[in-house]
Amino acid sequence: MKTINTNSIVALVAMLALFTNTANAQPRNHPPIAAVVDAFDNVPVDMLHSEIDLGEFPNHGALDIGEHYQGIIEHKGVLYLSSSFKEQGRIAVVANIDYSWHAVDAIHVPEYWHLGGMDISGDYLAVAAHDDYIGAVLIYNVKDPLQPTLVYAQQFRNKVGAVGMTLGANGRMQLAVTGGPNATIDFYESGLQRFGDPEFKFQYLGTASHLLNPLQSLAFITQNDGELYLIGMANSNTFIDSGLPFRNDFMALMRVDNWEVNHFNWGAESTRREYYLSLLRYKKMKTAVNPEDFNVQRQPNFAGGGGVAVTQGGQLEVWAAAHGGDMVQHDPTVLISTTSGQGLFNWGAPED
Image 1 (cartoon, one colour):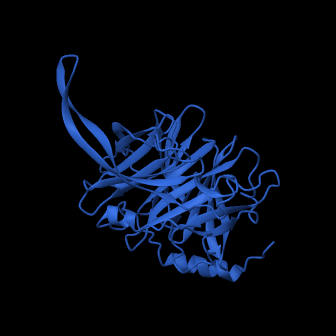
Image 2 (cartoon, one colour):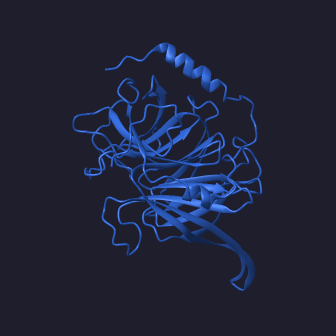
Image 3 (cartoon, helix red, strand yellow):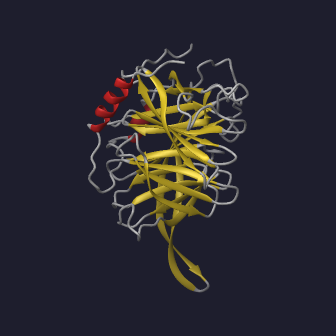
């Protein structure tokens, strides 16, 4: 087993301190995106590959039988990898040390055994969670990316498999969460309060159906002009009547349209908000390290872990992780893929 240079950890912490502001600022959004459609079109389909070593930290370690990874996302050079287990969910905090990925901490969530897709907005990480009956969204402050701090949690009417979060043009935090079998998306909006305020709460706005089933990860993005977009990630034959084989990973871009309509309820007129998702683009991503190996436990794919982050330059950065390693052998490593190596990491070249 490789020994980690402790000086590298100190240097990493010092570097991250440059990004960290301890002030209790208002929620920020993703870095600005002038044209989401163009950013989506510019995402390369060929992904770079690496692996995460989870074995050196006993508070996470190798997967047990029945545990699987479900979400991956990057923030300030740190990866978060959500996993689900029959007893509790876990989030691995992963840093690149000496040009290789290592888990440096793990968050345990005993209240919910299944942690799903994640999204980042500013310095806040949204994590989908559920148990056998109830869904929830957990919000962590990741201003210090190595020390995520839970600042808010809210339960929802359905199991929550994936969540997208963005700061709307109206200054309110907005959520998109998958409901039921991940075939519908529920939209929620907060007041103007900050996370941690006792009055803070997400209120239900409406529901939209989509042609993708099921979506495993979401990214909710506000364009500079206030337009709302949603990116969904899925694996398998998820596009209706597509005729695609099972091991395809797709990323879809949808515009979120919504408007108020008048309706009558027991003779009284009121207004409600209708939501509609316009499918604008989709692309097949080359996620697997070995395209000939169709084992989702070993190969990165969007049914295992998927996530989209927005870089400081306003580009879309896509991530994928395997559903799990060799659980029978308790292999402590997991393969990952990304569209952006940033020149900081020791990535391998994509397979032909």
